[in-house]
Length: 187
Image 1: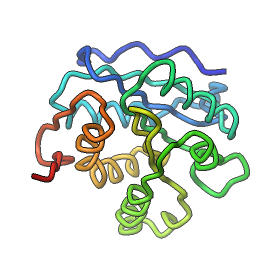
Image 2: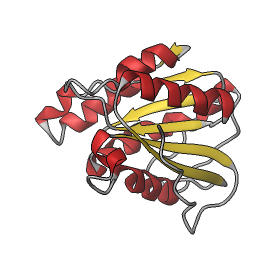
Image 3: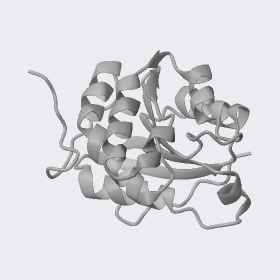
């Protein structure tokens, strides 16, 4: 069962709906404080110029719970962008990619390929990641790793394509700020 959403961050503005979905058995039980959701929030605050609303949710690992929550966020809550963190490794409970296969209408494997390539420049274990991305309706879902430094590396790498992808699937517009993650839109 998903935890109650975290309260909005003090600098958030209403607008585009973004969800940081933290996927972790231990964090969902309260065994440790999640650092992935706050890392996503910090990156977004630094790099998005458009108005947006961010919600951080923490759920347990597993194909069923993750798939159910992704469907709910896409189909009922109309999130424009879902950034997951966790559950992409080879451990038995890491089933985020399998849940994604159950949910996605269109997979965008280039996201995972680029995130692994950039992460491999920093750590050799990045090859173990099974991250992917894709769309369901007007929602873009991107799987991120669980460590804050890796989240930053991956968002730096793929975010330039996210605003244009949101345009293509009919989601509300998104503009970036600064050079890191600067949006690219073909002419």
